[in-house]
Image (cartoon, rainbow, N blue to C red; front, side):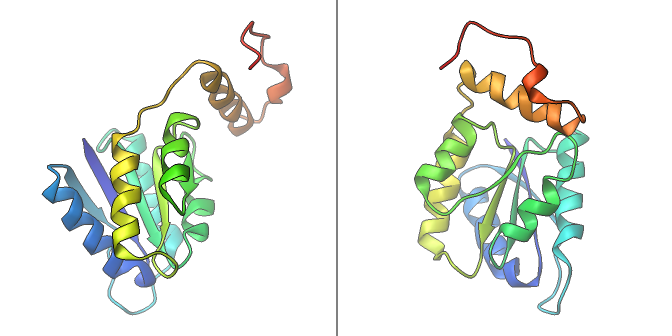
Length: 159
């Protein structure tokens, strides 16, 4: 697995820690959007990571800012990107198994290093379940294309 990691200035230290942690697990890391401790804007890193995913350079991405919210909002503007802000191991797992998230967004200010490691570990080990969730992910893609998801063909799996 190859993961792109991006951050703004508030997420810089956390991004470095996550990169080191992933490398220790044997994950290939592509560091993007790195900036100094001086202010830099999170949409730039979100775009770089999203483009790396869209162009097939990496399998997934991790974005870190003060809360994770700004990164998520910016990344979700990109076609094909499903970015989720998570705050614990359960939301990390569900973002992958139910929503097929390809970008994990984290808060540098609200989460401790050990919890972040656990969240990342769960996220990289979780796989999309498909089934009824695939239908829902397809409906998100319809919205992204400007279509009403209610117009999706009916499927027998209504759970």
